[in-house]
Amino acid sequence: MKKLITACIALMLCAGVFAQEKVYLWPKKTGPGSEKVKVEEQVIDRGAIPPNQNRAIAGVTKPYFEVYKPSGEANGRGILIIPGGAYQRVVYDTEGLDYVKAFNAQGYTCFVLVYRTPNDGHKNRENVSLQDAQRAMRIIKSRAKDFGVLAHRIGVMGSSAGGHVAALLSNKYDAEVYKAADDMDKNKEGKWTSAKPAWQILLYPVITMQDGFTHKGSRTNLLGEKFSQEDVDAYSCEKLIKYDCPDAFICAAIDDKSVNPEGNAIAYWKAMRAQNCKAELHIFPESGHGFGILGASGTAKSWPQMAMDWLKTYN
Image (cartoon, rainbow, N blue to C red; front, side, top):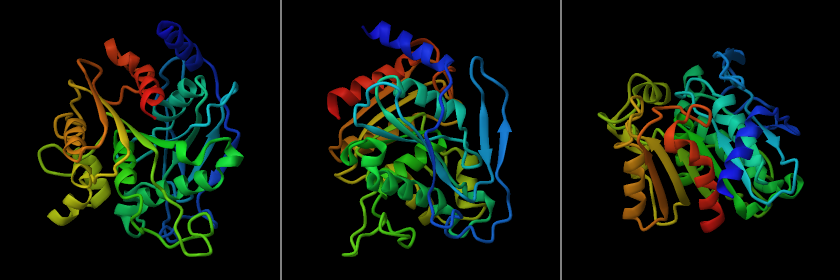
């Protein structure tokens, strides 16, 4: 049966998917703190990875997510997908749409986030991506019935720097990093809608900002050229975990030359275990960094099915 499902995933990747809805996150479209940013959104063709495209989006000031509902029966679960891109761009196809095709096929409703990246001149640069992730989760939960998902069964999936955003969301979901925009953020009694994900799936994630193990490009784009040790600690996700951190499925390849698994994926898993949080870790012998689905080799090819088995078993 697993071989059959894996084959179905491969077939789905060859098929096109089309968003049912594009949802801008903020009432005036432009995100808070981006009003004076002069960059323009652009789509970058990074060269096709047959049979799919390989585009990235940069210069985002009007963040949004696109909704992809399964063509068959929905299982009531939603996934906020946060692509990577070194906090410089949003790798929409290989770390967004490819995942949609695989998870839609098994009944998951997917929401692909196109978020602001910190190095475009936004105010509070270190928080703009987290702002967008929190706001997206609150909108999805507030409109869960419209989207055909259960509000308590919406998780997050992030890759590379998108994994850092997902891990920040999983641990700083209640941090007030923006003023409430409407009643999807905060109700009449003044209570915030929870932005906490039901679970987290992290793929070759950037986790730490600490010297020696951080991905320097992501850190520079997030924190700038000048930062304090306090800043480094505040955005090192392995230092943020508390007892109520959402369950995690984490995978990476040991031959990843960009984001060292020891100080990132493995460190996050260890920190979760130290807080008695539930986490499953897979370190594959090959596939490097940024493998997504089509770039995976060896046993790493099975990660989508492993993740779905984990979700069905524990979440």
